[in-house]
Image 1: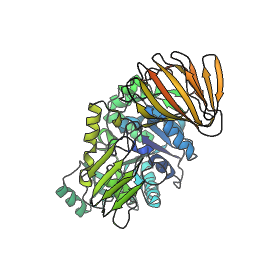
Image 2: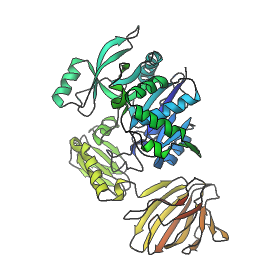
Image 3: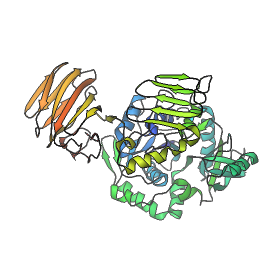
Image 4: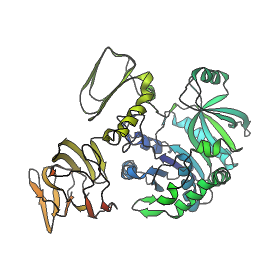
Amino acid sequence: MLITPVILSGGSGTRLWPLSRELYPKQLLPLVGTHTMLQNTVARLRGIDGAGAPLIVANDSHRFMVAEQMRLIGVKPEAIMLEPVGRNTAPAVAVAALHASAKRKDPVLLVLPADHVIKDAASFHAAVAAGEQLAKQGRLITFGIVPTGPETGYGYIKKGKKLGAKGIGHAVERFVEKPDLATAAKYVSSGDYLWNSGMFMFRASSFLKELKRFAPAMLAACIRAYKASARDLDFLRLGEEAFAASPGDSIDYAVMEKTAAAAVIPLDAGWSDVGSWASLWEVHPRDRSGNAIAGDVIAKDMKNSLIHAGSRLVAAIGLKDVVVVETADAVLVAHKDHSQKVKQVVDELKGSRRDEALLHRRVNRPWGAYECIDSEERFQVKRITVNPGASLSLQKHMHRAEHWVVVKGTARITRGKEVVTLSENESTYIPLGVKHRLENPGKILLELIEVQSGSYLGEDDIVRFDDRYGRHGAAGAGRSRLKTKKR
């Protein structure tokens, strides 16, 4: 039987700020190794008998990054389904189950978050094989992590009777919310409890049947959203109004805690959900002093700390059990024991409407990227990179003019009715209100410096007339202090 992997990549990312941002969340970052967490999750499917192409459910804002990351590892997803709004994991899996069922008869779904670390792939594959056997019997499987200690940051699952001829799994006796430390210690010492991983396996029909029983309004909304879905380039856009009307809930609350068909497969495979900087430190390679170091770092008399330098030299001296994370626009310094409180910082940034919660200074686009170098009230300077063969939209601005200087590669520029080609050290001027387009016709990366000047520099001052990436009309409203939202 073909297994359809369902990769949940809709998270917005707050717990690993400032490296993870709402528009560039942790699953799209290379936190452990050279590949991103999404890429590692998909690569981990290799070796699972019968596993087909992944079905990815993603946030609409991340769609081009998801597609590009799959292209870079040579994977063509069965589909990339776009959530117009976040509604938690149960609706995301429901629309995936509906899509998979439309493609083949009652497939087994393997549901995996895109942002987990699993060090022992062989043990993971063995657990999936065991889960498939129970899923064929109509069971709804969750994978329970064998605890390594009394962790208070996870929910727990109490094992019930053994299932199958070889005792490959257990019925779920009950799910338990995150306990305090003393209760967690009792759970671990008893040997009867597992951590709740958020990974699942079941027939599509089994899940949809139980969802209809316990959350009929959710299923009805998801059916409407799927029927209203439309193809957009390489993506499948769900019906926005119907999906937004769905109740939001997790798989656990919507189905698993209520169904009598729940089963758990124990998994001991070096798992982590990398839910905090402290947990990233635990899975990251460390030096003899217990330090996890990335980037340009000088560490003296440091112990058991995580130090990440993203854009400049970071020097740290004489500290223990701390987290230091530097990016181009923000620095985090925290004790490891308080790293879970990073979300409070993000909430404050959002409340103040600051862009540091949303995006980095370097902003990825389907055609390349841009980075704000400097900005004041009536001017803004950006460094723009355009991938070979890529093109920005045909557009105009009502409140700003632009000066472009090519520093690397070749640029083809549409300026009104004129088309010109510029090479390194050549420049052009785009007057206010003139239609224009920037393209890279060459085989190397195009780099240029853009100087904007005008009375208003917000990114919503863009009117698009033609765009190969399906973005139409005016760009989304800019509210950034640097005014660098969408292009």
